[in-house]
Length: 218
Image 1: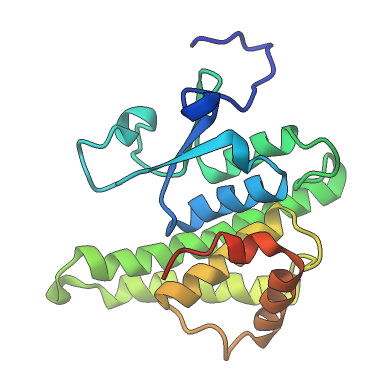
Image 2 (image 1 turned 90 degrees about the vertical axis):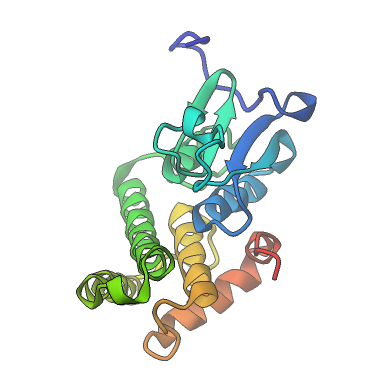
């Protein structure tokens, strides 16, 4: 490790112009979380995005993150993953109000909601991967139902107590990216069943330009 543990971590690195390097794709919902947080906090110009291919065994992402997963941020001699850790790091760089409350009940409520929204994304991804990586004869309906239940329960809980759509914090970012992924890949048709979340996403998108700005190219 090239840095001392008591030295604050800076957003810089081996990218062009001394920028940190973010390994992700424009279609990754977790990469979108990081890109959105960077825009919200005014950090985007200090980060160079380099595409990653999690399925390519020759991609050096597997050296940067032994799990071979993205997003992965290389900064100031350290490599940070996953998206939740990177958002925590970005929050330490915020000069004013960040995206994670600093202390108390509010902090842990935000982190728990963020984790729940990420869990919805996790389950949705596994549903998509079931169809992508298995032949039709090997797809498990039991497995799909198991993951669908996670998505449905998570959305119900988030619809009952959603983040403030006018305040861009880690929970709101995570939920917006989860809903954006569900819209894109459609493993679960959510809009008719949870109209509260449709309204929430419309209000969030109207209040936060970074949501549209980080949408994957069609």
